[in-house]
Length: 308
Image 1: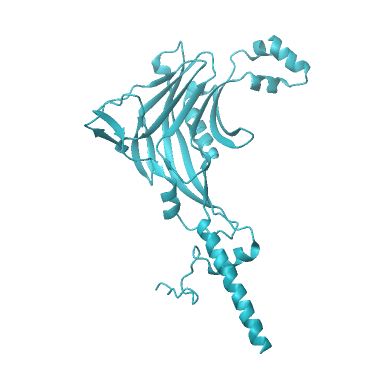
Image 2: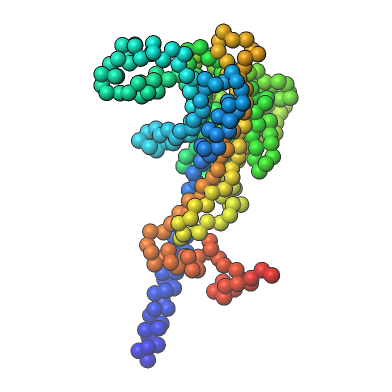
């Protein structure tokens, strides 16, 4: 009799814990992180620079920059422009002061290095929300270089489907097939533009304007159709998201257009899905074994038949 009572007691405890676990499971919300493939970005850009003899003075590197005490993280492509007269830089009063503080010549040159920075957002941790645009930011910190952005020769690829890039402007033309004007970023200037794909626009006859009819990607939908993540294991679930191939041109202000250095900069984005987890280990164990998120095939508990 005592054995039976003990069995019933444990069964009731198990049932209560299981219901608690299911209740918490329904409140779980996956988090996502958008990454940029930094190595690929830097290697492909540098490979294109190496193929152009007039680009030998430009070096490409990709770094992750943090802002706001590490809460915001951006991957930035830096195109470093070599100094034409490095000795003159080292003789400047600011450089001499840094050298007296113990900084090496290489470190001083790196601080005074002229560079062009390009970043595309959103990146980092995101809510499960729709993304309507990609924001392209170009910062030209050189003294005599111009940067051209060719929007018509740029593309956004989603599931290997290539789409023409459209830059958002206050007065969108009704005919999007018309060529778009290059964006020019002169020395010591910057540019920030929102872009999406051509097919997301539609003409509204009531307002007589082109309006955005669809989002670029909905993160909630992407998580739903992605491979299911097990909230109880430690493996990363990283899925392809989209790619922005940004066509840019570089040249010195005094050089003719024939000297333009063309680069197709590949920003490849991936989506890391972080399943939300329950803190209490016993409840995590129950979800791993019997949770609805991980409902296994051929399991007697769920009555699910295995696929043939």
